[in-house]
Image (tube, rainbow, N blue to C red; front, side, top):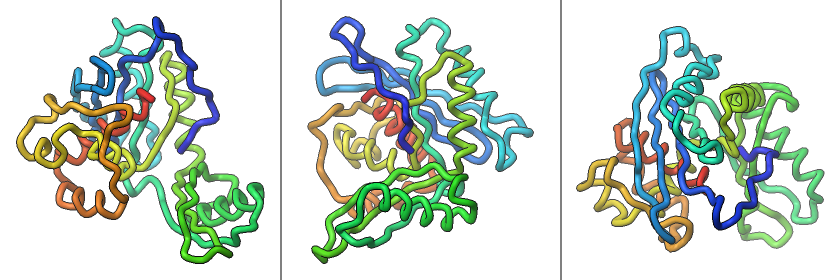
Length: 244
């Protein structure tokens, strides 16, 4: 989900060259620090797996313990590099498609998406944070909308905790989004996934990655679900977005 915070515009001598990606799991968290080594190239700088305390494994936990742990492992980092994007598992967010009239204005479109997201999460409309993308439609009279949503309280809690710890969180997203991004940008593609340890992965970023449909990427990624490679790929994809 996109944050309302604006990204730092940047100057050549203050550009963002490293950032963190976080992939949440039921009983732990996979973290990856990525560093930009040259134009169009990013490599894994550090990987961590943290087991969450028992109390933090409850569904309504917002992992404030994790932000404290990040503060400890990144104590020597420049403040502008304390950026992270969180990739949420499927059970903490919902996604869907809807078809709406092409003539629908932006405000009306936002209202439709918000209502659809709230229905998907079984909560009131004001309780959701959502993002959406308008996709090509077969009918000129309609537009196809793909939306993603999670509880607003989840987003708010993460923003509160990260700000308190001196971190900037430009976005939260679904793990599937993060995994697709990482696979598209991964040097060597599926071959690297099968032959190289995640500590050795390298990425083309930004740009110069393979343009494949979400459907094709999901088919390629399906065998990875439930494996360590999936969570590391999600963390890397989140880290790439944090570098943007």
